[in-house]
Image (cartoon, rainbow, N blue to C red; front, top):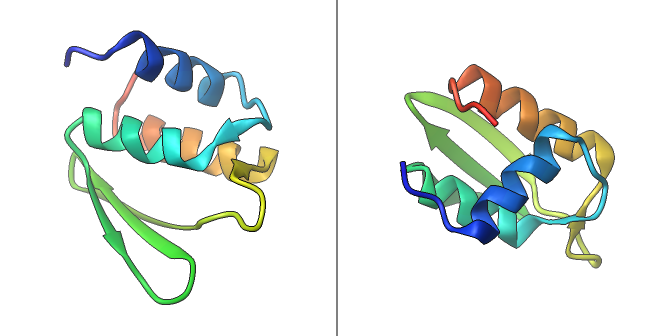
Amino acid sequence: MALSNKHRKTLQAVYAVQANVKFKDIERLIEALGGQIVEREGSRVHFRLNDVPATFHRPHPNPQAGRGAVRAIKDFLTTAEIKE
C-alpha cells in the first residue's frame, strides 16, 4: 500500500486519537487503503476494508470527527489489520 504523505498524516492522527481529523480525510484514507465507501441513510456512511464492515455517522455541521468517532475508526482500522 503506497500512501501519500497526507494519507500517512491522517493515519497517524487517527492512531493518536486526535479530535481534529477531518472526516473527508478519513474517507480518502479508507479509499487509498483499498476500502469501499457506501453512502447510507442520512449522514451515515458504510466502510468496508479487508472484509471488515463498519458504519459511521458523518459529522455535521463541523467537518471534524470527534474523539469518540476517531477512536471508533482506529478500532475499525485495527480490526482490518491496518498498522500505523
